[in-house]
Image (cartoon, rainbow, N blue to C red; front, side, top):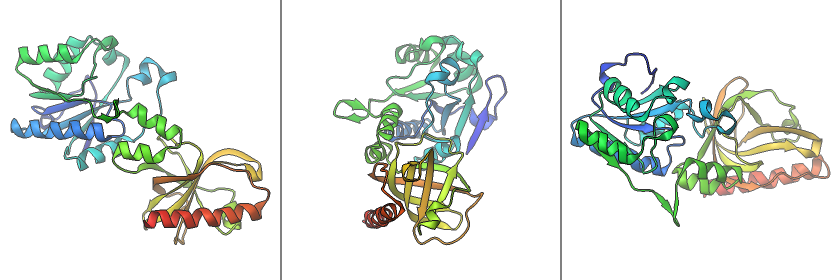
Length: 308
């Protein structure tokens, strides 16, 4: 269950006396999943319940808005992924300039101890908190020991000397390396959005598409992808085009989804698209006939790849 908590507001008593993990947790990737497993275990050891506390909006939204990246997951998706990892309750702690200006010790006292009345914490090795990120795992360990809180600092999770991180996943998505991103996420990267009216060129070519709009998360590199689209009527293997359509002189970046085997009207509905593999980049074709031939190949390739 996902609940919003404001720093200056009281919280439900059932959210107190928990073992907490505090952070952004954007993407709830495999590194996060390892932390959540340790969180769940510590909660069991202390006869309590685990609680994920995610910061919303992320601190960079206030501290450096020009450097704040698009999220990998919506809040609702984040809470769902945490639930699938065994942590049933997620709190979105609403950030503000005042909250971010709290000194580290004040954050520990007022938020962790007074508001949540935490009995334990589990964090990653790069966890920092408080004004100017002055709160370190070492200080946290000292304060937890003084106040009788359990503390677990997990080891870095990664491969080839590189830690799995949301930033690393964003870089892979920006380069169109969807398979690598999915490997580190532990699931297929998802786009969600409403279906809006388009130019209907796909229908004219014999490949009708659902045009996604209002997508709140990071959109991967331009290209043609294979994936699965989930609608209120079911889930369908799909070929997904992300980017402009230079064959028709259209430079607008769009997300067009061709749902294999689907017939019906999706306008105004919200759909979710899980990206599995990138098939190719964006190409300008000589004419509509050449594009149509390539689309037939793309769909055949997507169908075979998804079938395997």
